[in-house]
Amino acid sequence: MRGLTYLAIGAALAAGAGVLALLAGDFPRTLEAYPGSTPKLDGVISPGEWDDAVTFTGVADWVPAFTRTTDPKDLSLRGWVKHDGTRLYFAFDVTDDVLYGIDTPRWLPDNNPRAHELTPQGYPWFGDEMELLINASNRWTGAQDSVGDGSSWQMVCNLTKSRLHGIGVGGLLEGEPRSSPKAWETYQKWILSGAQEAVAKPKPGGKGYVIEWAVSFNPCLEVEPGVLYSTALGDRQMGLNIAIGDLDEKEKGAGNFGNFHHEDWFAGREGTAKTQLRYFGSLWMRAQKKK
Image (cartoon, helix red, strand yellow):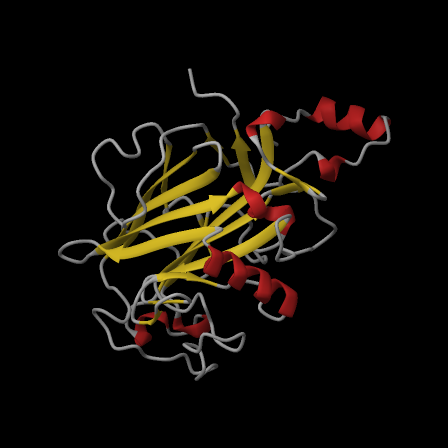
């Protein structure tokens, strides 16, 4: 349980402490973000640019929402995470044998002909895409999803559409909960102001893409009401989930929601909503460089 032994949990209960305030989620997968150099957000993993980051891989051992991924040539990734004292950075080098909207037509799901609208009625995650979900406050109640503010949020980077550049150019989109006008407004403000930035580009020769993503501590990582993360707070545990969505030809996703070929999650339980904060893994924000 990521740093908490059962003895520690028992002691916390005995002391009347709220264990939920101590855990980042109940999935035993953790990433650590150490201080490092500031990368250039250009959709290219340049030599040495991410050498000081923590690396991770997927997605065969991630949690599937639909068809399980078994072939790394079909879908796989290498990821990196670090921060520069002001912003948190992720990079994803994704292998994907078929790129939706590039190798295929931009077909629509039967359940939503408005899927490509850049409105709350659209599906921001419809396409080849990555999602970041961070519970900076490290708290939740019951089956709660992200609130849609600095305490907890879910944002989308799509390969072929974006808020800043429209249909056809990848980048950030407002995530969930789209049904909340306040969350939608917050996410859009973050994108337009540059509080979050992401670049998504197909790799030369196709067969995959690269995403580089920046998250500003202020205003996106609110660890306590009115308190934003900084290294002056020391090491800090946050909830983390990451999703990758893979659309191929429509018939490959027959029987799955929206005809998705794959949707794999860094953390969660099969048969449950991976967006629930209680199913997240952990992100440790480290204040000092790795020794």
